[in-house]
Length: 217
Image 1: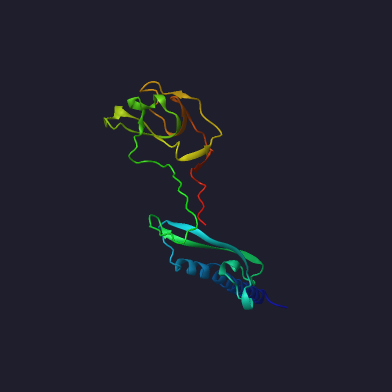
Image 2: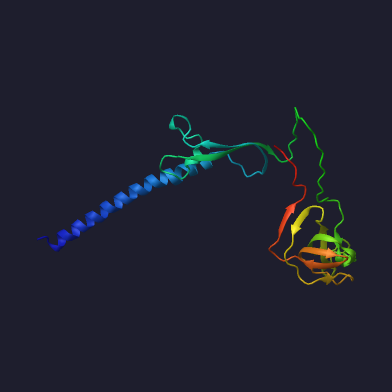
């Protein structure tokens, strides 16, 4: 019959063996599923600068590829087993924002003008009485008046977004009538206005930039 000391030794050996097995499995799994993908991502050359992407092709391919070699590594991402089935491959042309492009061999040409926010366009200052006749969608912030920078001259400054955004508005706050200079000094957020009667747009709301029907591929 085993003594208590021998039992403790056997239990310690079993725990050590179990720990060793679990550690080996964890190392193998983390290497394949975490370390290797992370290393490839960190060394892939991604930059934080925003770019413009134009879709060139969108196709569905067999993950196994030729000679059982994956056609694209992302087909088997995070998988330890053999990849199977199909996956979608999207190829794009990438260019930096503001890059000049040269168009060649174009079959047709269509000119579309998109309205945007003009930095030189006047913003409406409620403290100056500009908000009495607002019509459309406006983004308002509280700021100092362009005439005076004193604390008493702080008020709402609204920028017209009517030509920029198309919004699906679901809920509005009660109207505020901006018929006087002091009536709308604290407008903050997105407002829908009609003849100077402005209602704050409650979230959630969905807005999309206009001029969305341009085909690039």
